[in-house]
Amino acid sequence: MMTILKRNNFSIVLVILFLMFSCDDKSDFNQYKSIDAKGWKANDNVSFEFDVKDTISPKNLFINIRNNNEYSFSNLYVITELIFPNETVVVDTLQYEMADKRGKFLGDGFTEIKENKLFYKEKKVFPISGKYKFNVRHAMRKNGNVKPIEFLKGIQDVGFSIEN
Image 1: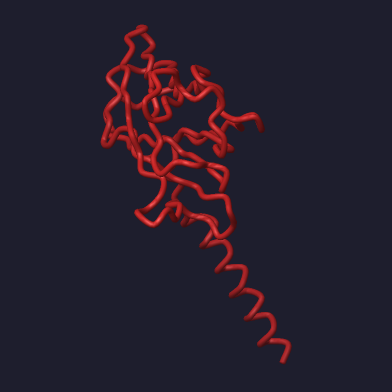
Image 2: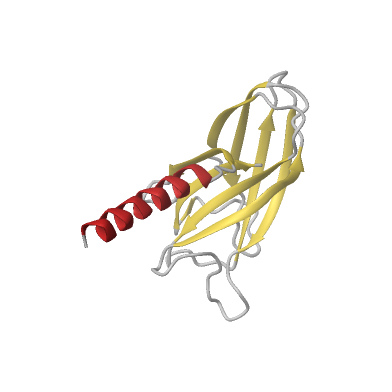
C-alpha cells in the first residue's frame, strides 16, 4: 500500500513539473490600463511603452478591450499611434465589431464583462530595436455629430499585447 502511495505522489510531482516547464509563454508584452468609471474620455490616449530587442521575428500585436453591458454600441472606432525609437509615428484609424447582429457582445467571458482580443498588426517585424510607445484613443461619435463622445461608457480596461 505504501509503495502505491509513493508512486502516485511521484507521478503527481512529475506531471506538475512537466506542466510547469512545458508551457511556452508566447507573450512578449501584455499590459492593461483601467478606464475611469465615468468613461473613456475623448482624446485621452491610453499609452503603453515597451522594449523591442528582436528585429527579425514577426509578432502579432493586439488591442485588448474589456467592456461591460453599459457599452451601447455594436462597434468601436479607435485611433492608434505607434511611435518608434527614432520618433517615426505610424497612425491608424481602426474599426472593430463588438456585437453580433442581434446585439450580443462578442468576446470571451461568462459574466457581463467581455474581453476582446482585437488584431492591430499581424506578423509585424519591428525594424529597429529600442523603446516603442503605443497610444490608443477612441473615436466614437453619435450619428450626425462631428464631435467625439465625451465619455465613452462601458469600456473598463484597454490593453496591448505582443505575441510570437
